[in-house]
Image (cartoon, rainbow, N blue to C red; front, side, top):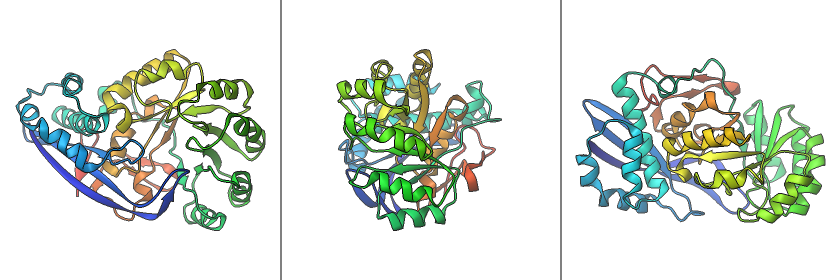
Length: 336
C-alpha cells in the first residue's frame, strides 16, 4: 500500500464554542491508502482536550510508514489489529482504519453498510449543532438553518433561559450537550424543565470521571442521559451501562470503525441506546459515520454543514437531514 498524508485547515461558518473552548477553524488530517488501483480515505481531527494535533498524528504514522506500506492488506479488521500493536494514539489509528475500510469497500465494489449486512432504507436523522453564543446569535443560527433536531451546547449561567428562548423560534426536537459542565444536582434540577421544553435527552452533563454523580443522575433525572466523554474506548462501554441510558461513540476517540462496530454490539447487549457523533470532520469522516446509520438510534454527523468549505465528496446531507449515498464502494469518498 502507498500512504499519503495531508493537513487541511477547515474554516467554520461561525465561531464554534462549547463549555471549555472556542474555535474558528478545525485542523484535520486526511490519510489516503492506495492499493491495486483504488484509494481509500480516512480522517482524524486535532483536539486540544485530548492533546492531539495534526503534527503529532503525522509523526506517529511516519514512524511506521515503511511497515504500513509493506503490509499485505486483506481486510480492515486484521489491519486494525496490526495498528494497535504499534503504539499509536486512537486518533492516528482512526484515520488509517477509516482509509482501510474505504479502500476495502472500493476494492470489492460495495458500500460498507452493505458489506455489514445492513441497508439504508431507514436511518436516524442527524441533529444540527448550535454552539454556545449570545442568545441572539443562537436564535439567528436556528433561523439560518431550519432543522428537525438541534443539539444545543450549554454550560453557562443562563442555560435554561437559552433553551426557553430557542423554543420560541422552532418546534424541532432539542438535545442538550453540557460537555461536562454541570453537577449532578444541577442536572436533576434542570431535567424536568428541559423535558417540558421538548428536550429528548441530555449528553454528558457531568465530568467524565464523576461516576458517583452519574449514579445519582440515573436515579433522579426524568430525561435519559447519553455518555460522551465518559465513553472513549471499548472498555468504557460496560461501565457506562450502569450509569447512562446510552453512549455516544466518536470514531476518532475509539480508533475507527473496527472498534466502533464492537462497541455498538456490546451496547446493544447491555440495553443501551447507541449514538455516533462527529468532531467537526469534513465529508471524509462523515461518510464513514454514515455507513453505521442502520445500526444507530441517534447520530450527530453535521460536520460538513458547519464548514464554510468542504474538501471531499461522499455522503451528501440535504435539507432537513435527508442523505444521498454515492455509488462508489466503501464509504464512497472522493477528495476534491
